Amino acid sequence: MVVSGPSAALSICKDAAGIAGNVFAFGLFLSPIHTFRRVIRNCSTEQFSGLPYIYALLNCLICVWYGSPLISVDNVLVMTVNSIGAVFQLAYIILFIVYAERTKKLRMLGLLLAVFALFAIVVYGSLQITDRGMRWIFIGLLSCASLISMFASPLFIIKLVIRTESVEFMPFYLSLSTFLMSISFLLYGIFNLDVFIYVPNGIGTILGIVQLALYFHYKNKSREDCREPLMVSYI
Image 1 (cartoon, helix red, strand yellow):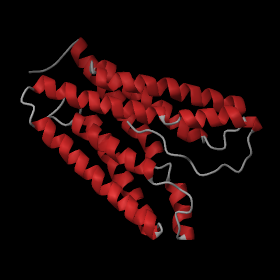
Image 2: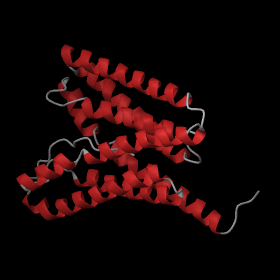
Image 3: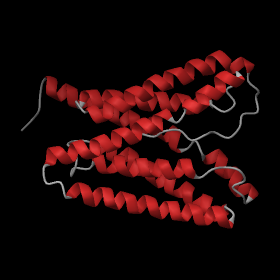
Image 4: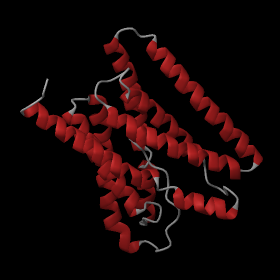
């Protein structure tokens, strides 16, 4: 059966928004590379925290599961972006473990195993829900809550920027990537009529606008020697 008319146009718009979101997400996935270049160069994680990468990995795994055909319908692009994100986060975590001191190394390894165990419980538990609609709602609420908490994580950075009147902790391209990715998946969720996608990404879009507005307001007051980029949310 060939889909035509408004339905075809809606599907094309949805796919275009999803593909754009996948592209813009790379700006977020690549943002910690500068930090890990320093870690590798100094053979030490110094005072950097590995917790954001642990939490980002869990968020990506949950969203991968939500996008799978076993949970939701026609959300392949949600699966792809979060699968790639999970690979990046796992790579960062492994590098952190390799170069961390023994105490941090053991702690991060334990947290990594806990993430996989928790994800396995979520997958197994959701598969026990025989009603497809209830399973979608359960995992949808879980992924939505996870995404909202990830999008809310830059709030302390926003507060820091306002307090210090400096954007050294909030790199421009990181904020821009966050905004572009969020608005892309906001449109994707709207076109797909998926409340569990457009609600958290709507919040992410608003926070992205706030970050960009603050950047342009305070950029001339900031020092040029910007610190390593901080972790932010991924779809």
